[in-house]
Image 1 (cartoon, one colour):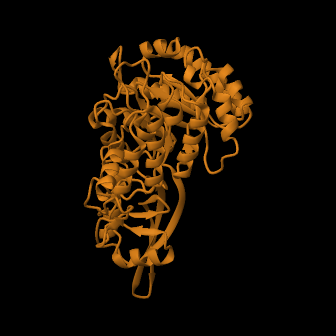
Image 2 (image 1 turned 45 degrees about the horizontal axis):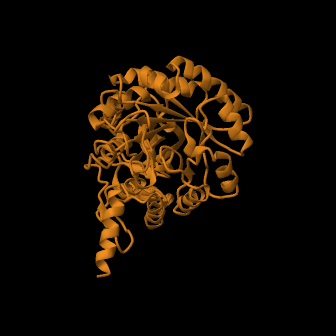
Image 3 (image 1 turned 180 degrees about the vertical axis):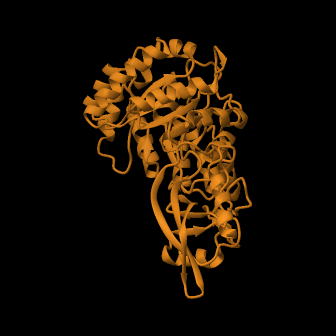
Length: 438
């Protein structure tokens, strides 16, 4: 009877939209240990030893405590995919033309560091973005690079056709949540841009080409000021409904804070599944990393992504707040299927749903913090990939990126551009390394 009441309370809790971060109780230690013995990939959160993340000889070690009582860390994903935008978004506004060979070498170094998605270039008119006039040559040079995807920006059907002819196997389109910014950036209204992009997505789907959708000005606009979250959700839903496989939400002028990012994300998550979302923050006001951390935690009450079901026999329902991570997904108790008695032992069969991590797990960034938006004065500075990787490493989140190799890529392009890196991690670690040689 007590167990039944407990399950009823859990059921009400899981159905409450007001408590998106709440997870379930009622697993005993024996059941958890049994679960771990069945599947070695299961990681029990909150172990006494913690999860130490080891860096290179120039880095610190972190003791990541994912205890259920740690409200900051308990809802983080186990893995984050980083979309590197430096070769396109980072270089597009450079006044001095970067040689094609330098761009290609940068891309190769980024892939060598472990980055699996690198936005390579854009098929736009050279009149508007002369830096990317060599898009076809870049694509020709990276065509045979293995281990990574190279999406390219295509603003219209003409650009899409040029990208396909150059061998692109993934494209991206760019919309805005601000009417004024849309007109200044791509010279048309939001609705006109969406109509234009439907043609691109339709053509891409005919040849099974994935399309990534960008939404700019998701928090603020350089012309209109504050952008309502409902407008962001509308544009994101339109892109998703037309067939974009991933929607990247961009704080174009870097004005967002966790307090303004959360309501924006919650609005978007009501209409687009969390698995199809990414975030793209600029660091103009120094808020990018805090906004990324916030995005990793914000939950989606409407679109839980159910992967599979798992049944356990629990001998007792007695203790503790616990969470399991099974192949990067959370396990949530949702339904009791009944009681069975074998002699004097009462056994309960419980059904679990395996859900994706709570927050967004795809983050855009630019090596060495290169780039910004040419139509938003003062909005320079994509968040540096090095800083993102350093933070994620410190949280015990896998990225599969070798930070030292990434630092070499940043150093390479900064030397070519004759400027110091914008990455705080790069500056700190290079200074530490230099001092160690004295």
